[in-house]
Length: 168
Image (spheres, rainbow, N blue to C red):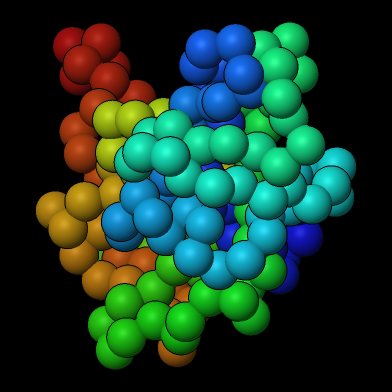
């Protein structure tokens, strides 16, 4: 997806036989998934969802389980301009991509190649070398300077290059 699109959710497995689908919203509140107008998938198709429950939706034009099953795993995007601007000291996770990552001493750790969240909390993928995965927590990322496009990283011990076997 292009830089002007923000990942807002994902379609899960079908629910029932009439085309309903489970949905996972990445918005602050589940209803945020449908609050900004039609969504777009990775192929550029427009999808109109109506929430039936916090994690259940009807997709316009989908009326049976087989059609719903074909949507499983579809990522849902919204144009950046459809979202409200972030408050002060807030940002969208997509804004972190491309930011420089440095240690507290100012040494480069690369840049943020991606921000991923597979249900256990967001983590940053730093370009490296070596490529690193950093949990996106205040302890590991104490400074996010959006204006300077820079993050200060305090890598957890297990993300540092080398390991215990090198210490012996």
